[in-house]
Amino acid sequence: MKPALFDFAVAQSLSDAQSALLGGRNKLVSGNQSLGPMLNLRLTRPAGLIDISRLPELRAVEEHENYVRFGAAVTHAEIEDGEVPDPTVHWMRNAAANIAYRAVRNRGTIGGSLAHADPAADWVIVMTGLCATAVVKGAAPDATLRTIPMEEFITGPYSTALGPEDMLTAIDVPKPGQGARWSYWKYTRQVGEFAKASAAILIDPANNRTRIAIGALGRQPALISNPETILDGSKSPMEALSVAIPDQPATALHLHAVALSRALEQIKVAKEFSA
Image 1 (cartoon, rainbow, N blue to C red):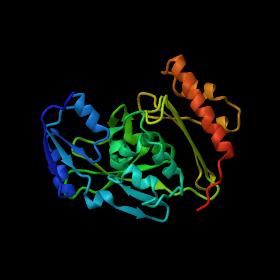
Image 2 (cartoon, helix red, strand yellow):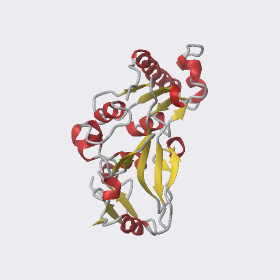
Image 3 (cartoon, one colour):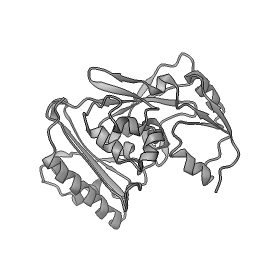
Image 4 (cartoon, rainbow, N blue to C red):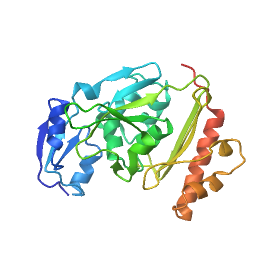
């Protein structure tokens, strides 16, 4: 299929892009690797697309003492290739390298993936697992940036906390502390496909962060409460998931338990983080 007729414009500034959002008839586009297929299937029919891929504010990467701020238009390939700072040294690079295919990674952006909020997308689960924060700008000229924890930013399938005139401008990724460990495992039927089940684990004692996130649920990722009980073996993956995601059918629950088990195996042998 082909998309319905739409206008196309290139934004010259952030205010220019947000002005185009007034009325809710247009959509922002950067890499167009997620929105494009939906346009072709006519699952979305915006009046116009506003290209924001080259805006300097969305391409910047700022390194701070405790986190790195990634502009929303930074591509997967730039993260994979180490062209931008990686606060995790290699965790983000490894995740980026396993997103779809290289052609997709060359064009797709971290902000576009998160704003699209496909439940099976890599950055949705990885950024939730890494305790990342979405940086959002409202439409008012004097609006200040506001930050939203990733577990609150992704609100459902293809749904986020963005208002109709809001823009995701950046993502803040915390720097892990000395001795932190990380694992991420996803099940796909073949290379390049979206995940059918995924799990991410962060153990960061220096910053008092221990997190287990389950993804590819058909909605936002689920965070396991009391993750220490799984890590110390007092609760099995299946027991924990039966409580955390009771809405999943038995077959899906089993697949997610496998994903979590594989992530647990990885975390046991993962090298400790050292900046």
